[in-house]
Amino acid sequence: MRSSASAWRARCYPDPVIPRPDLRVERVERLDAARLESLGLRGLLLDLDETLMPAGAAAPAAGVVAWARALLAAGVRMAIVSNGRRERVAAASAALGVPARAWAGKPWPGAFRRGLAQLDLPASAVAMVGDQLFTDVAGARAAGLRTVLVPPLSDAGLPHTRMLRRLESVLLEGGERGRPVHR
View 1: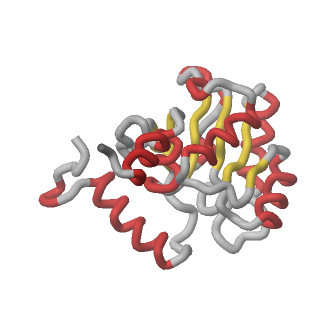
View 2: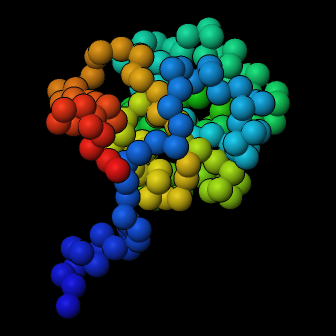
């Protein structure tokens, strides 16, 4: 008989979650409407901190704002899904012209499903764009979304985030003797 913890885990993560992104890009601005269409994507869920704007920045950079406006004009639906503070998330949401969820609860799949509901699109047509393997990629995959990983915009971050980035690096770039850890 399964323990209550393992039953709960099976409900939240019905399939094994392999924390590997479907796509890696250098910056969010590399995701233009034509590329998204070629991938069958009509919507994006977006992480905020270190994906759209560096930690401590007051607003997204002009290039990110222009990118978001171009995608919106092309009919791509977007929403921010962030574990950040309401005020910060609301300011970015207003600057980009997209809805947002603060204190979202990533990496739990429900956080991504709530964001997905804001887009009114099936999971198969949406990708999560973020900078963290364990928070953005693993959680989004557990929710049935495709994933895009970008490098963080700065080296800042909470101590536990900086520690996890080292582990992410090993998983993504290779473990012992340079061999990939995931196969």
